[in-house]
Image 1: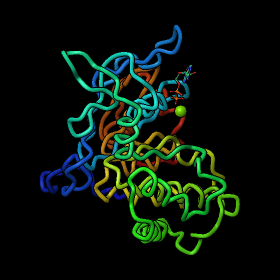
Image 2: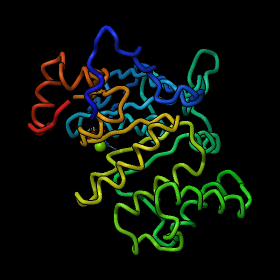
Image 3: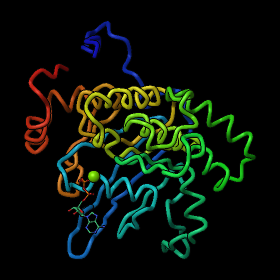
Image 4: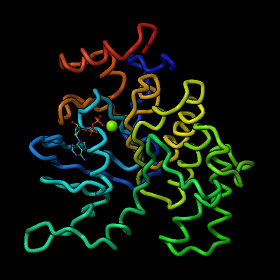
Length: 282
Ligand SMILES: Nc1ncnc2c1ncn2[C@@H]1O[C@H](COP(=O)(O)OP(=O)(O)O)[C@@H](O)[C@H]1O
Ligand SMILES: [Mg+2]
């Protein structure tokens, strides 16, 4: 990373919080979200704002609730308290007589088309080619004409560097290529936000960068991104906000320059001291 971020009286004004000044959609507001599994409260009142086009990177120890939080954002998990809005619209619920009522399945699915998600294990359909994986949701969920969906899918596969592998099946692709197809598939619905849950954790080390490079490009494109990762160098490069979670709570959040060099909370400091290699320079 460049060192041009040091503050000086002549420095240019700070960049706006959102990555892309043109971004107008994908404002995520998470308010006091709680989630309990059995007797265990795994989200203990989480609040987080991500502005349109913003890039929030969530880090924290295993079991701290990162995946559960992501899954509440597209209502793969119901919340037990609090609420989430995207561009002012409640996720998974509607408000009636001052009470939240869960949406019908059909409306949940429709709402979910605004929220792309990329999983650790790619989750591609094994019996469909790369192209077929990307056109499936636009055709089935959005009723797009096949030819239009195909054209757009080829553009997206090109964007992730895989236009020439459009007719390959997942088993014929490396993990990095499969994950790039999964990203193209998530983009195909033109989502307001994209959620990434440890997108490189299942990859061999030499394949990590090709996936991170695609996400880096997205980070400047104006789509709101919320990314759970253990790749601290990547977090430092792309995040507007780094969020540290532990035991179901956000312990601390801030710009990468601040939080990595000068964490306030002992728990944040202790976590970074374990996961950041000594050669990691801010
Ligand atoms: N479906 C589930 N049923 C019961 N417990 C769960 C379920 N999903 C997650 N948990 C528990 O919730 C806690 C947080 O999990 P998770 O959100 O996956 O954490 P992280 O992604 O930070 O590793 C863990 O203790 C986990 O065992
Ligand atoms: Mg997880």
